[in-house]
Length: 327
Length: 289
Image (cartoon, rainbow over all chains, first blue to last red; front, side):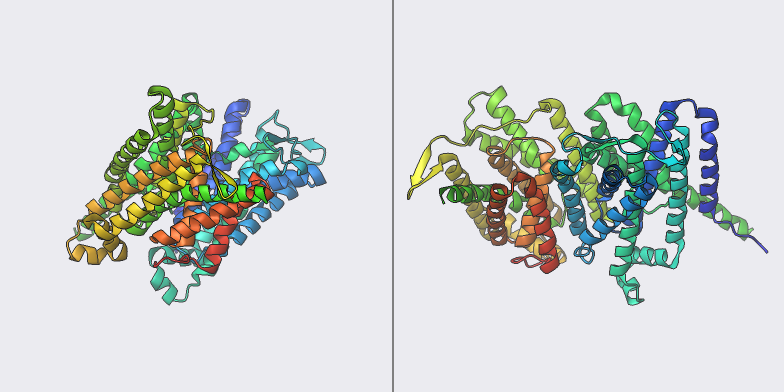
């Protein structure tokens, strides 16, 4: 009997192990640890964006908005009502999921461009709403500060030591990736791929596209909101500056460089661009220009991103294997 | 009562700017099916070019000249973008998706180049004209009348263009049936190129018109883009008369909301309007697609 090990899950487990060991060497470098936490955070957002954009074929631009909704909801609950940040993770995720489902109800049946417009609309109405929410403590034009940190018993996860929060992020990251992997390879996930690649045919086979898309969208929004809530509790401070277009394009570039609909790809994209973004920071306004140019270049050159590259080699491999079988 | 009249006049004026803004997008979407997310940024780019022309480099350059130079520049920019980017993407599979992402990239490039060269402070274009006109007891600023007149003249010109010229008719034919257009020998690529260029030139005109009432800021392009699209959807893609009616309706409602509830609620209004329109009648109320 041959035990079939899924290659993706194997790669994921190895990467979890490597990531879990990283603090042993880098633990006392706070800056690098912070960047690694940001890598994990953006990985979660990018993978969930890819889940709707690449797998679901849903043209959503709202993933950063969900992230911000999750962050603000959890922060407001934590600050105003004293809700524990652990519970806040689920409150943030739930809020993002609820709002996501609500705004997508009328548009999921329509062509992609309409979904893009509505989700971009959600992104654009958040800054004025955050400004208007000053009386309930959203920070208005400034930042929402003093978000309660994570706590276990009497131990507080402070920003002084970045290693403990790193492990929280890693656990969320790992659970998200395993869930996403499970979704993609389930019956449900296959239905999406079928819908994306041959919509009329899939519908003929009885795939309910409207319901499936709504559920997928909800799941993606939930994880974005959840990691947003984590981000808030980790940094202790959030502001509407997160909705600036440069973060938007940064995460979008992570997704497309990783490859649309090529699951672990978005993680690689997130790790590359979180670090690259730091190197580009001295360029100021030219940083988004470079990212924007990169988005265009990837679309024009290799729309499958990095994960499209092995395909060229796969072609060779098949060629040689075929030859061996002949001889 | 007088205040209400002023608000309504303001709404109608903004509506005039929105008409051109929306027609530029509607033409592009209707004819070539391209969803240009950099449209709002192109509007802002045009407004900034106008600002550079009329205030810094050539002080006192008259507005009629600006209205000729800036749309011409944007016409060229549109041709270049179509030729260099959209056409290349169109040849590949999945181009609806790749064009949207590539135009987001383009928008970011334009916005940040503006930010780099013009600085973070908001700019203002000079008013289109000074003085006031009294019509039946109501005082109307002259620049509002000029704005409406330009918008009206341009709409008439566009109607004539689509009805009578060969290029205009080709555009309508391609909008109705792309394959049919190919069969009768319409050069599809040329039509797409001119459509993109026309769309950019209209973006330029609306940028100057709206820039003469609002302050200029690169990030505002996104908001203008969403507004333009809501108008296009309400009016129906490819329908001129629909765009006109939708632009004035939404412009007036926007002014009323800004007056009664405050300007913070303007964007939520547009998004809620969008959701309602899409829930009730996603094809718009006048369109044929």
